[in-house]
Structure formats: structure tokens, C-alpha cells
Image (tube, rainbow, N blue to C red):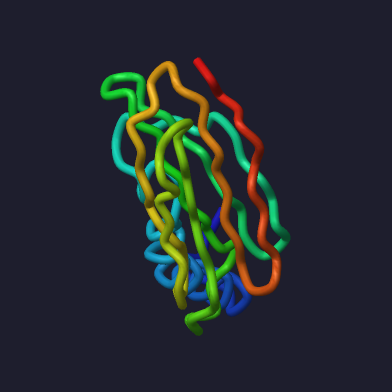
Length: 136
């Protein structure tokens, strides 16, 4: 039985298309913005609020007792838009970061072990803030 080592045209097109997709999708997937990447190592998501085009994340680092808030766009167009992130511990001042950003606002941090926090943020014309919570 004779076998041909020649690739059929459809197979060549499939291989070339797959190689192109892998070469273009790799860096974008690797560059995904996550709460852990924004706030730093050791921060775990303990709450979130979906605003539609973005999500506000409240994270906590049990090693140092700090909370971190960041607002991350679901997908970035590359154009800056108004976004913000804020956090306040009971008895403290609000710490905030609002402005024109392309991927995320924040991070903002507060030392809040055994203290209640208010956290929030916004994107475009949608703003949200929690009540006092996470008091442990």
C-alpha cells in the first residue's frame, strides 16, 4: 500500500489558520487583568459588584490585614473612560482613585483587620457603594 506524504490543501489551510490564531491570541490571553494582578500577591477576592461594563472587586490579604479595591473593565477598547475605585474603614477617611482609565481603576488599599469597610466604584455613569460590611 502506497502512502502519500503530501498534505492536502485543506489541511495546509487548517494548519496555517491554527498557527495564526495561536500566535495572535497568546499575548492577549496572557495580559488579562485580574484582581490579583492589580492588587498584588496574597489578595483574595471576598466580594464583587458587577456594573455591566466593569466589575468592582473587594479583596483581602490575611497576611497583612489590608483590603484592596479595584474596578476592572470586562473588555478594553483602548480608549480611556471614567472609572473609579474607593474604600473606607470605620472611623477613617475614604481612599479613592477616580479618573480616565483604559483597563482598571485603583488599586486603593486600607488596613482594616477587625474593622468594617465601605467599598465601591464606578464606570461611566454607573456608581455603586456598599454599606458597612466585612467587619471581621
